Every structure is written in structure tokens, then in C-alpha cells.
Length: 296
Image (cartoon, rainbow, N blue to C red; front, side, top):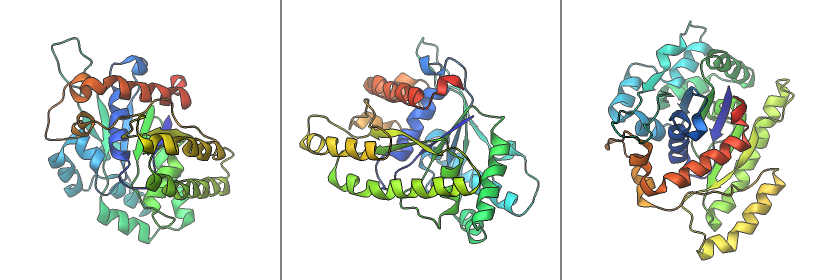
């Protein structure tokens, strides 16, 4: 099992949409999913954007009301209650199509709930934090091949459930835009990653986890002044943190914004991503190589 956190401490850079895109491509019958990987999306953002995009608003509301969120699971583990992972998983069924186009694949989702997350965090010190990460891994590892973790913005050491997502991850993918304001915020992202590595090391984890798989540019046009002025600085920042800026990127396109609209019905990858299918596919393939997912 490989855990991949989608994280940037800056809001509005596309963490939830990138999580959706990757989950779609890795779960579907495309070239990057030839091994039939079992995919789980753990949505740790209180807004549940990626969960809603995958399951729909009504289904996520039902999950919350039935207390079947990842935060409820963690709270029950914290209180020593017996849990069954299946009770907290919701399946996104495979798309059905009569054409030769690639159908959206089967995957599983875990949503989050703010109130139970706050209750969990109120009683979670570092010892309990490490214990919760280990318990969650024990539940998930044998059931899934790849876990995508969608993280919120503006988090710090107090946000224990978000820290669990980072501690759980083997790799971090950082979406960003090539603008001054997003570059200014990247230092906070790297600082929290370093803190998470310190916590892992204190828990006798010998590896420098999580590894930064790379920075992927979102809403990007390489012809713009913003891109040409800031790309070299971003690459230098990446190098200082022992990572790279992905060669492939996601353009600013209405179609990619529409892809996350849960009120629309999509059965295939081509229907959801239309002319930008190749852009998303190339980012997913590059991530696969960077995270060595072909060894899953």
C-alpha cells in the first residue's frame, strides 16, 4: 500500500480537484491502472469537496448523519471501541458505457466531519496521534493498494486529523499555481512537512517520510508573464527541498472545473475530462513514476 497526500498549505490551488483527477485515472481501466489497483480516497477537508465530487452531496450528507466518516472512525479508535473498516467506506461504482471509451473505475471514499474531528483533536496529544496513525494503517494496508489523501489548507500542529493524513502518507504531491502569492505561501507547506518528518522520526520511523513526490502546476498557461517570471524560482525552491516541479501540468480550463461538478453525470474518463484527458493522464503517469507505483 502506498499513501499519497495532496497537500499545499495555500488554499484555492486545486487540492481537491487534483485528488479527484488522480483517483479517477488510477481506478479506471487506463494504461496506468493495468494492475487493477484498489483505490481509496480519504477526504480530510471539512468541506468534503473531493468526497462530494465522487459520491454526490446527498450521499456525503447521509454518511455524516450515520456517523460513518473517517473522523468518526478515529474517534472510536481513540475511545477504544471496536471498529470494522467496511462500516466507514463508501463505494463509487464503476461507470457503465456501451462505447469503447474508458469507464470511470470503482473506488472507495472516506469523508470527514468537522464536529467529530474537533472532538477527536481536543483529546489527542502526540502519543495518541502516533497511535491513531498506526491503527489506521493496520486497518487500511491490506485492503487497498493506493490511498489518496485530500488535505485542507491553513493547517498547523494543532490540526491533528490533518497531521494524521500527512503522517500516514509515503508521498506528498503539492499542487500550486505559478503566481507570486502562491509561491510566497510554499514555505509554510515545506515547514509543516519537515515537522511531520520529525514526528515520524520520533516514532522510530527510519525513513524520511513523507517524501515530496513533486510540485504540480495547476491552472497554468506557460505563455503568461506569471509563468515565465516565477517558474525558475519555483524550481529552485523545489530543488532546495529535494523535489522537482513536474514536467506535466494542468491548464486553466472550464472543462476541468466542470469535472468536479457532482450535479453532472459522467460515465467515462473522456466524458469527464473531454479535450483535457491527455493533460490529466500525463500528470497521473508522471506521479506513478515518481512514486514508483508500478511496484504496488
